[in-house]
Amino acid sequence: MNRSVEYCHGGRASRVAAALALACAAAIFTTQAAAKTDERGLPSCSTFASNDEIGAALAGYESTYAEIADAFTVGTSVEGRAIHGLKISTDVDVESEEPEIRIIGAIHGNECLAADMVLAIAEWLLDGYGDDPVASDLIDGAELVLVPLVNPDGYTGTAATRKNANGVDLNRNFGFAWVEGDGDEPFSEPESRAIRDLSQAASFTLGLTYHTIENYVNGPWNYRPEHPRDDALVDAMGEAYAGFSTYDVVFGWDWYPITGDVNDWSLGTAGTFDWTIELTSDTNLYWDVHGEGVAAFLPFALQGVAGIVTDAETDAPLEARIRIAPEGEPVFTDPDLGDYHRILLPGTYEVTAEANGHASATTTSVVVEEGLVTFVDFALAPEDGSYALRVNRMEMPEVIDEGYSASSYLNDTVASDALGEPDGAFYSMSPEGAICLDMGPTTPVVDVAGDDVEVLSGTGSGDTIAVYAAAGEDGPFVLLAEGSGDVGADLADGALAEARFVRIEDTTSGPFNDDEAGYDLDAIENTSLSGSDTDTDTDTDTDTDSDSDTDSDSDTDSDSDTDSDSDSDSDSDSDSDVDADTDTDTATETDGAAVAMTPGGGCGCAVAGSTSSSNGLLALLLGR
Image (cartoon, rainbow, N blue to C red; front, side, top):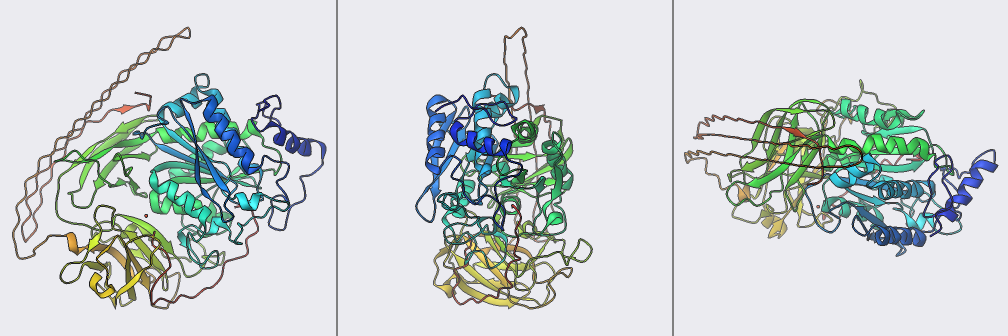
C-alpha cells in the first residue's frame, strides 16, 4: 500500500495512508474536530481504513515481515465481520516462554482513531526491528498481540456507534465487577468473548486499550474507590506513559466509576496490568506524544520476576498461581508451558507458587533490579489438596457510584482473596453479589460419594448463599446447595458427573458498602480430589532442588561490541512432617540472578433456578 503519507505531527509513514491523510486534513484545516455524537466519538468512520482494509494491512505486515509477524482472526462480530489480530515476536510460529502483551483498540465503534493508534504501534514495532532498540528488545523478549478494531459492526457503515450491533457497550460486558444492564450476562457478546478467549489462551502480562477522547492515562480499579494493592506500581507505569505528554494519570474510579470493563477484568481475573489510554483527538494521532509513551510503557513487561512451574516428579508444566509479597494481585502460569511473568518495581520480594495437587513453595529475598528480570523456577512436589485456582467472573448488585468514597466504601477485600486454601483472607461478596471460580482445567470437581465441594466461610457469618456448578464457563449452571457458614455441595444433586466452575451467589439483602458486607468467602475446596483422611497420621518428607542456569551471549557490531553473560541459580529445599496435630518445618535456600530479557475459562449467568435483580447502569457518556 502507499507509504508516502505521514502521520500528523508524527513524521511516520502509514500503511493505511489514504485513510489517515483524510483524517489528518480534517485536523489541520478545521478549527475543531468533526461533530461528536452525544456519547462522544465520530458520527462516521468512513474516512478511516475500513475493517477489510485493516485486515489487509495486517496481512501485508505478515507478508513483509514474515519472520516476526503473523496475522490471524481473533473472532467474528454479531454481524459476522472478522475481528483481525496480529502477533509480533521472533518466535511468531511457536509457543515460547516470553511475557505476552495485548494491545487493542476501538472497542467502541465510533472511536475510530483508536484503531489507527494500534496500527501505528504495529508499524513502529515492525519498521523499528533491528534499528530501534526499544522495539527490538520488545520483539526479541516478548510476544505482542495487537487487535486494532474490536467492534467492527459499530465502526462500519454510514453511522458509527459506540455499541455493537446488539446495542451493548462492549466495555461494560466483561466478566469482572459486571452489573446487570449491558448484555443479558457477562460475555453475552461475540466480540467480548473473542477477547476473553484470546486472553485465556495466553497469559498476558501487560495490556493497552485505546479510546477517544480525553487526556487521561487510566489505570485500575475502575469499579471501586480503593486503589489496587499494587498502587505504587500502577502509578509508576502510568507516569511512564504520561511523562512525554500533558496527560494526567488517574485511577479509573477517581475519574468516574464503570463496571465490566477490560482493565478491571484483566487485573481481577488474570493479574494483567491493562491500561486505558484516551487519545485527545478523534482525528489527530499525535504519534510524537504516544510513540514516546508506548516506548516507555511497554518495557515494563521486561522487568520483574519470571520462571517456570513444573511437577517435581514428571517435569510436566503446571497451571499454577503466583503470589507476591508485599501484597498484590496474583498472576498465573501459561497453560501450555508453565511459565509466568510478574511485573514488579525494583525491590525485594517473596514469591510463592501454588498448584492444585501439589505442595506450595516460597522463595524469599528475591531482588528485582531496574530494567531486569529475576528468574525463579519452581518444581512442586505432589500433595493432596485442591482449591479454587483463579477467579473466572465477579458480579456486583450495583455500581459503586460517586456517592461513595474510599472512606465510606468499607469493603476492602478483592475477589482473589477467595483463591487457594483457607488462610483467613476472604472476599466479602456484598449482598446479592456473585462470584464464579475456576477449579482448574486438570482438577475439576468429580462426583464421588458424599459432598464433592466445600464452600468455606472466612467468618462463619449468617449470610446465606446458593452454590451452583457447571462443566463450562458459560454454563448452564445447576443449583447444588443453599445455606450459610460452611456449605457442602454434592454434584449428584444437580445430576452432574464433573464440573470445573463453581458459582456462589449471595442471597442475603443488606448494606452494600459495609466492612465484611455479604458472605465472606475464604476458599472453595474440591473435596472430591482431596484424598484426605482426618483420622490418619501422615508423614511426608520432601526435598526439592531447583537449579536454573541461563547464559546469553551477544555481539553487536555497530562501532561497538557488547558481551553479556548471566547465570541464575535457584535452590530450594523443603522438609515437612505433617501429623494429625500438623507440625511443619520448612527450609528454603535460594540464589537468584537478575538478567535482562534478551533473545536466547467462564461462569456464565445461565443459571437454573436463579433470579436476579437489576439496579441498571449509570448513563456514562465519556470515552471509556
